[in-house]
Amino acid sequence: MFKSYFKNPSLLFLLAGNLYCLWYYQHHPGGFVTVVWVYWFQSIIIGLFNFIDLLTIKKFDGSTLKLNDEPVTPANKGCMAWFFLVHFGGFHLGYLVFLFIQFRITAIDTNFLLLAVLAFMAEAIVSFIRRKQQEKNTLINIGSLFFLPYLRIVPMHLMILLPAFLNLQPSIVFLVLKTIADLLSFALYQHLFNKSRTDNTSLM
Image 1 (spheres, rainbow, N blue to C red):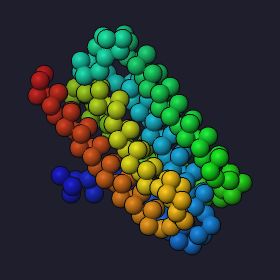
Image 2 (image 1 turned 45 degrees about the vertical axis):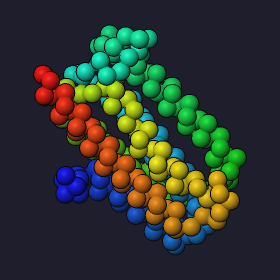
Image 3 (image 1 turned 120 degrees about the vertical axis):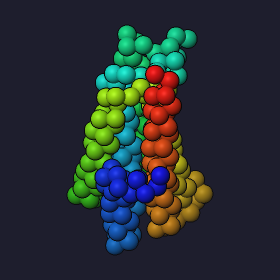
Image 4 (image 1 turned 180 degrees about the vertical axis):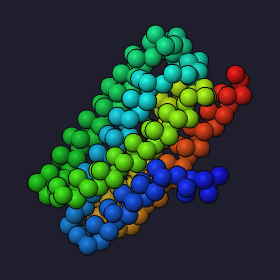
């Protein structure tokens, strides 16, 4: 299973983005603020593409998620997608306020921020295209699709924000832990997505 993940171009882009952040912080110890903002944008990208995925999904099992106590259908799928956007966006709005309070925005290296965000954007685009190709002939568990982004973002941000919560100095250790959490949650995301796809296909 894991061998196939290492052949996944999405994972390679994800790994490249994280390694670039590690390299940057190693050579610019004062750049922790920039790295934190990069990861905030990474989360936004994950949520944005999941929103588009929910809007454009064609074949799905609506019984795995309810909206107003009713299964999701093609008719109310759009409402569910927008609910995800509001919920996910609200979470990140609160997160944004925390970052503004905790970290100085004037300390951001905009050139590095742009390059790193582009790497994570490339990963998101490749993942989105691959998912759409997979969705053509399979039934997708829309409940998993709705909740899986949280599985990806929560572990990695817990790792990156631990120094602030524990009053510790930022260090490369926390960035390494964030990278590990990011890669593991990505692999688990892919596993659960593929599992839900396989399970639903067997019911057809």
